[in-house]
Image 1 (tube, rainbow over the protein chains, first blue to last red):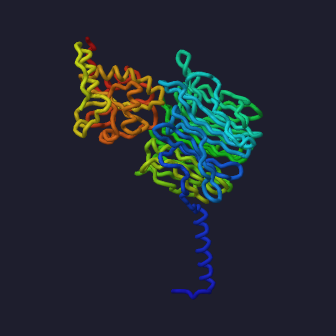
Image 2: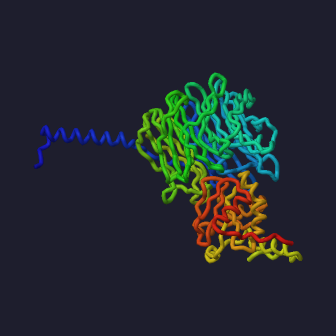
Image 3: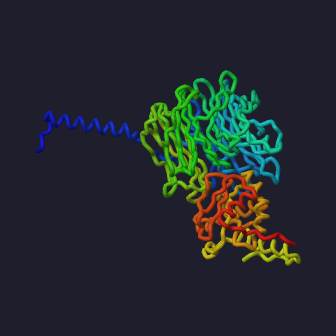
Length: 401
Length: 157
């Protein structure tokens, strides 16, 4: 029997319906995806997106022609992307889909790095960087940031603004792989550089790490935190964390014991995000040949972590990113390899409850599609990736939550 | 067609010629992908140090397996375009066949998660062994032995 509008039962039904819609919307986490125009040219790749403390978005990328490789960047303003500016160019660069340039930006200036072959006929390469002090408004001459002077592999850099206009740079350093019997292992190192590029301090953080997985770093309420893939003597390659506390780096600890024993390099590093005392770490593993992306959270600046949440398994090849929104919700980016590959964002609340996933773009599982990179401003996530459906080109999107 | 090479006298060099004539730029056809051979499929990358260490061993083993039903082939993990792949392979000193992507697809191969990785494929292209990390000749021989294969012939001049 149809009840007339205005009756008490009808009003209750309308209220309940409206309430359920709002609940569903909140629980599903409506996300608005917008593909932005890209300032990068054709034949561009290896992009990164990074936000400064004012919420301005910067995009960096590498473009190549037959002569040389070029590292450039652009800033997103209210009127769109600024005219791209070149940071550096060269014909002796090491250009690689997994180990690629980074840009760090804050009010004191910028720092950018690229990789340069150490010597012709070798596969060794150095980390070269330029610094842009804001008060000088010009880039410094290129410099090698590691001081070992050894022709070896140096790369997989992460950078973030630190105290008083300095920048914390973390990298994989192969100096030990060139001597010893047996040869030494890849190491993890970090250094603090002032805005003109002078090395303030440097440390070895871990004497034996996985050879070719990206490092990641973030600033917590208690200082910097660095995550990376370790490598034990028994070839267990789990994700470890170390923190700089009162000038001393903590003894590296696993964020979770996957116990993934693997004699090779997965080429899949972890990603860490931090907001005050909250930390999120996402990573890839494939123990027992089962690909998996997991997420752990911390509410004490990385001193301890939750049990892992499985973001996806097994339809993934990793390539993860992690950010924390202003709302304290966590977003993890990853590659979905079900059928055609897709770039996905998955969102979790502060307790780790899954809120929903958003498909950003179709992609390819090919190495040439590289690693999608994300960063957050407020409750928006910016994503950049390389579209290889035709001529490779860097793409950018924004997802508003 | 294989590129012609200058004839040499000794038997060992004739074997090298045979191997050279079938390496690098010669992609397998669909029929050849089903040619009754076992395949040792080595995934490599120029920036992978353990991969580079394996190459001389794989080159030599490829020669020693030339008269058997086991062949060594390589795949560029980075999936660079064919011309660039061959250029990189040449620079790395790879002397065994480097498969093109089309052939990899014909063999039903999926890229591994880890480098270096070496697969042993049966003549029906079934993965019979997956060897992760840097391999020695002994590791590969053991993998073949486990499949009942003893393909090595004495290496004579």
